[in-house]
Length: 114
Image 1 (cartoon, rainbow, N blue to C red):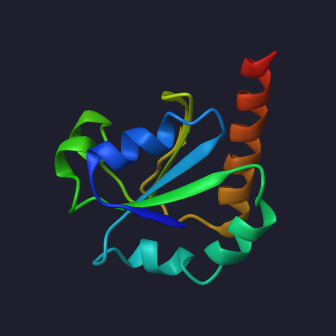
Image 2 (spheres, rainbow, N blue to C red):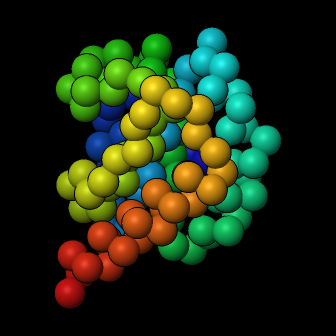
């Protein structure tokens, strides 16, 4: 996962023509730590189809406010600088739920290409 710590780097990443998933986390977030053990395998499973970037919400508070990031971890899919879909909830996210979101993000991205 590419670590992004400022808004300029974030904008550069999400403006790519490929699908980018921004994962907003924080070091103090228990639910963020819960997903850490399986996220490398998830990234591997989607390699070549999705670029993953990680942001610490405490490092980019203004960006989080602009994007209305309230709960973490939050997952937002972007392509060409446009937000496609997001997965935000107050509940702990399972690997299955994250993969369902990623599959949906790929579907939306592919639908917009045609």
